[in-house]
Length: 488
Image (tube, rainbow, N blue to C red; front, side, top):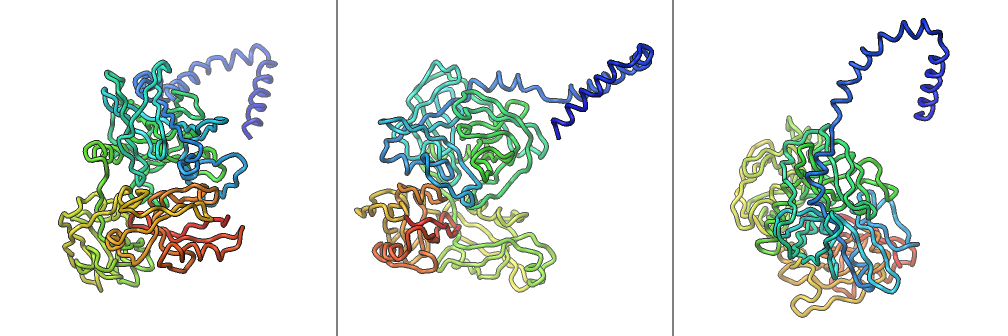
């Protein structure tokens, strides 16, 4: 259609050129009026040159290096695998991108982006850009300076990582406020797509506070800014040149950009980096409940006039919520006095509450409002549940699914309220590499069967036919989901 429109325009122009001079003279006075009408439209378009000049120098390329034996485990979820490996698009609609560049006989390198947040060398990027890396190098926008970077900390649950390089007087990005963004606002991304350093792309904010599958702690900013492999970890900026987000993933059924991208709000990223810098880890609150949105049909069944709230569908035995008196079927309306506009707000509000702190949870039960007083628990950190050899317990060899696992220690099982579980230590084989499985994930069941030992778990896998699919019940944070994997 666009090509046809262009041809038509040229045809009209040709016809105008063949007209008699009097006809041209009659139409000539209209030209200034048309130019005057077009001028305001042209003036309304944003100028990104000042933004690029101001913030471009603070954006860096992040090159992560992995030894060949560990490269498979370090790939980002949804990132393209090695050449020739099959990809399941149904598992990879939401992709976090860090392209791998294998070098013959050498380590595998991954490329991402980041931006400098302090003159003395602190850099913010995505967790999937540097997770599992043996060495990280930061290349400045001037392409003349490179630094070896130390990974200060990684938080996979929000996909945020903090790096540190030994340098002074570096160009620093100006940080903004994502809460001031509105749908329709112009935004721009700067990064290294496909290795093309300091590339700027632009678009608009499509929506705010998007909840994505298995991403319960981040209210994503959705945009139509072109984001491709290598953009991960780079800044999303408003027209004032302020960083309002960290580019993290795209929605794609093909592996490439399809007009929908997502960024982590800068406030979320900064909260994580402050904790990583001060204590080396991120702590989050938990109460031990499972929830689902309150639909119109459920609201009618519960005799409620509004659909705002979250229905409790599971209460962990002995957990903080059960001790506070929560029951299955309760509808949570507010947390610490903040009314829930969306059910997905509750996990974020709970996670943001300091473990051990008292909190209130307002619920409706059988038409009556009650306020429950809860002592908030703590979500185990990745270090707690995913260290390779904790308390003398070694990880198993990779299984048919390409997963190395170990038993979840008794103390952690008690914290999570499960009788037995395995924790993923490494993702090393092709089947799991193309899935949503991450190190630190907790495996509860194979298909619909629970297990009570690693041997029983492997026996269940051994019963599966090669080429078939097996579904693992996986827990991450307070959420659980089935993840299908091909059997190798």
